[in-house]
Length: 210
Image (cartoon, rainbow, N blue to C red; front, side, top):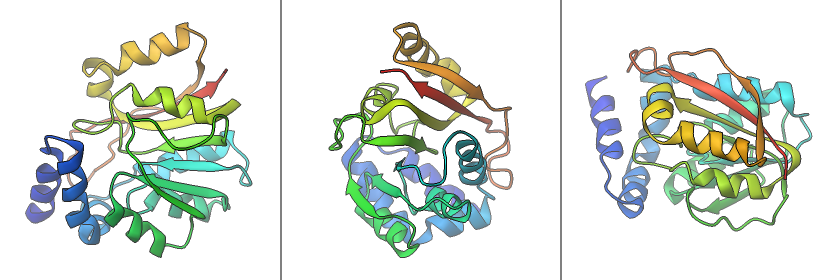
């Protein structure tokens, strides 16, 4: 467990996207063991189940920050088959490819321009990516652009970062400007019950209006 915690803290201490990518590439082969097996990472399952209540299983869904594909694996179990994966790390995407649940793989970073057409997806899901040292709140702009009107952007977020990391203000500004509307906010839960029980996440669901 200590080794797993050290790897997590090492990755989260990255000072740039380049360093973050390099460290995720090195972590990729151990990621599922560290997060899923050692820490009991439940956010993929919880977020996938939330998404499934709003989006039909034949929907075109982007897993934004797919990592090793744990979210896609959960969505696959729920009957989703039209899944696209993007991630900063090619090493993580290679692990995701082995799960056999995605039809497309792209190396991209949230917070930068995304190489998808406007209104391309029915929904976007993002788990564990809008977090400390990773994707900034500004990443929501591109997710809204590539999601069709009436589609959904679903993501997990640490409650403390929502309050203190600029997310609350940015999400509210997007709602006030008519870009999206809050459709559901989950109850708080522990995403890493065996590893970091003090962390609390919630899942936000927004309906895209433009």
